[in-house]
Image (cartoon, rainbow, N blue to C red; front, side, top):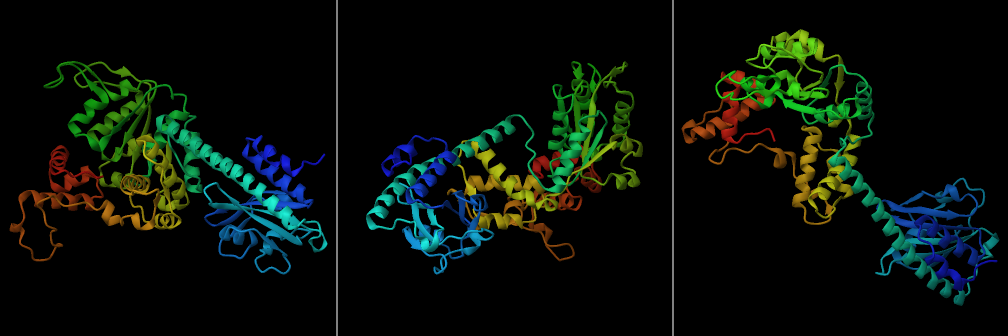
Length: 505
């Protein structure tokens, strides 16, 4: 027995599932009018999308999008907020491409706007007659008015359900992101270059051989190292990190190998080194290209013999560690320059993993933007924001020389500085405004080399600040190389950088 129109509200509000609700809503309207077809449309930023259809060949229509700039019956109804009756063969508003490939075309369309309780129009419902001359549709005034009332009730129920479904999806997305933030490595991207690197990481995780991760600064070398460890049989053991370039040479050896009490002034107790502390797990040596030659020989022994000897000790200790190393330097060139051991290179480069620069995977930028925006907003308890289409286009064309790290920092800047819910293109600072190294407080920009300039106009600190920055830029922020060019020890150069407040970030 067919439902009566008075049963309509009850039939709608008994349904909680969004997909079932929109299907029942549409099928009921089509049955009330005794026609063959119907479709539900939702307003999207780029046009009007069919989210549900019923009748013959309905599957051809679901997911179809009418471009926003093209004339269409649903577009007219949504933008004007009015019901309309249209004859597709005569009405210029009809977007005939929507029925392309269908054997039977529509002859008469009754279309109502879908309106929220607030009065906002969010979509439209089409009741479609395919009979000759549209003879099945009941177009009497009383019936149309009654039907309009029930469409209004149904559109509020459907609108609330769709909003709830969107909120549910967003909540699930945030839960996934927070879960990744707390535990799993957040490797985001679907581009071929990125997937190739990720696939290699998965393959390498099944072995215990050393891995050498190469790539530009900011491409995620430590994240990939963590992913290899996470997927390996060592995942329940330690993953310990040492940035070779972040610690003076004199301390690096003791950090890696430990020391015995009395080994040097201040060694008042035994200390376990990184390799021993990571027994059973993984040691990640970042910026290994900056490691001093003397220490390289000791690392080679760890790889060859699986043993370490603390500073001041006489006995070696066996360790079971996997070594993953990373660098943004050209190691073959460093070998030729005599600053890196060739035998160590072949020991750490058993499984090479090259990470693509962001310019090689620009199709991943939209996903990375959404990930960083949602993750940091959730972590800090800030309201969610979104990028406008123009902002996405601008960021998709931006030259991120600092790769993913630069993009991540820019998203954090925008999250903190944009007051509204939407980030527009004009909110985005230029690369020089956001990432430019700033001079010391008392400094004035120095003239370019070769130009006459009164150096006595500057303080000693301002001159040193400008010199250190220029040297670091020339050496591509390789601190060891810059210290060598300055003619000072690495530890001395590092100490001066800290006093001057100069950091790579």
